[in-house]
Image 1 (cartoon, rainbow, N blue to C red):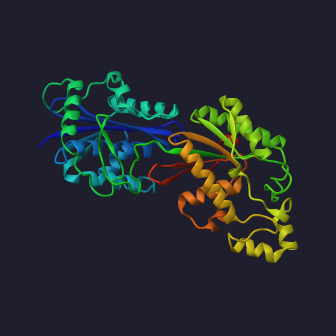
Image 2 (cartoon, helix red, strand yellow):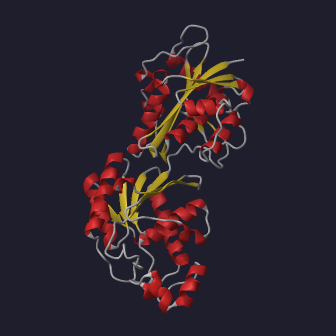
Length: 417
């Protein structure tokens, strides 16, 4: 039976923030590097990135030899202990990833070992290469990788002299090219790059990693206007208020936070003044232009523009009850949430197609952001009334090539404190 060492790592610049993983498959007898895998995965936590690195490494090993014995080495105590069965898996993001990792090989073929970070440098460098590529709006390319050369720590192996790493990788590529990659267990959802170029393919489903970077929309609600603290209906059918002094300060704080993350590659804004002013504050920090997308404008609240909820309840109770009961009902002279959903969906699809694999800031309003979140989750229209979105808050949704979407962040306001 062949023996493989799988080393895996993942990282997040912000936790959650722009994240990536790296994995290496090593021949335990010779020390040869047989396969590498790395991917930028958009906004995620360290733990999610580490788990995705583990899954990718196991699948790369499976593609080489499904009957092999695999020894996983990671510097994540959490992943090692959870996969070894000593710690319970409580976090909802971790459970499906752990289950996916457990399906690749029978448990009898896999062992886990925690190692210090300094002994996991190859996988760590791959993860950082993937994150760097994602920052540039690119995919990680094996041909451009220097991770193995950069890793200074030696890889301990059970027996046999160290082999020539480049020769080992070349042999693995040739072997994989000559035969069809074996089918991985059902439930996986990724093509794994073996030695960077050869993929072991499996059907796309559920939580499995997608080797193409998603289009990630970072959703920034505009800063306050004079109407915001009064909780008045402020859509696209009434006045077009500017940011208040507080709103301008909020926009600057959001801009500083986004500049510190360094992941935004384009900025798209609603045409309304309060969003354009917020977007320009970010653009000035990042040196980017602002594109206007009409589909991101706020709901037209018709006759309710400028009124509080209580004032509408007093003046038009029947119309308000109808609006609260059905997404198809519109304020008098205004726009229904169903209509908003249609135009926001159309704008979303246009932007996904244009910015595939990139991270884009969308500066918009409460209803469009809630709509994007609701649609990503597959939630019903009434979910719009069950979310809180503060002025100048950040949310994030990633859209994958297989049609899946993943909510990464909702109503983040730490930058305003």
